[in-house]
Image: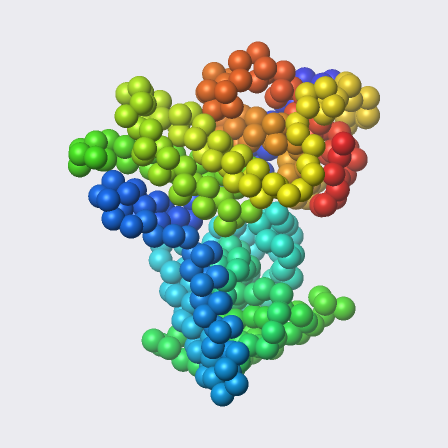
Length: 218
Length: 180
């Protein structure tokens, strides 16, 4: 294979394997708001990272006052639940479910390379009735996280996970606006599971997920 | 700014948000930094819009991407301010013609992963031409406008970038490894 042939194949491989990225909806919204704000002379909304930083500073400040610690943690857990719920609901809007639609774990896992500072464990639970639908990037708890999407009949299950840094407080399960949220830490990862699936079925899925996280951490 | 001027700006700039994000993402290597860069670039573009001579959205792509590129470079320099990074040097970073066996098996399942890793390891000046040409499909002329380099330089840089990619792929480079 000569050099030109290699270049042709290289170009084709890049075009095929590495399509242009899509700007996140949140960015689109932010840019529009910034332009309108700037052109109209109003204040520009700063980025989510600064908001996240401000929020975490506020929480640290709260946590420093002994008696407030528990309340702060509960607030943090509750705020996180809100974020997870928002992520789940947003994902159900047309075109938002996956960045990489694939039932192949060997396609989904490498897709996260270079997008996250960790390589999330990805497993397909088709044999158990929870086929992998795909993955996407999301941003919760002040950091980019992996979102894995699974299906169960007509239901969508979102799994958000990231390396565990501290204990996540608040109830391990809750129901908001008809969606069930489960969360725990396993295999070094904090995960949240969100779905409108019945709680017993969702528990069944969580058991699979937990086992996989523990298995992959060994 | 007049409302219709603002609308004209949005019609020119918004269609290129994906392209801007893609370029920023590859140049910064970070999803959040990329978003900040795109937002800052959009505001800069708004500021300089009166100097934009193009007629339609098509013309705006290279113009806007040039602003994105410069914004990303500024952001990166700020980041690296206290790190002793060697500046890009054509001679130092240029390759002799790669002598390795070029028969890289690009059909493997991990192609995407390997490409991603290899592209991330390219020096900035190589990475940006690969992204603009191979991923975004810009013409040499457009890349020349974006990178503020003559077309001939763009072409030779692209050629060297491909050879460098080839070497990285042959060696099966792994994340974190820096090739000098």
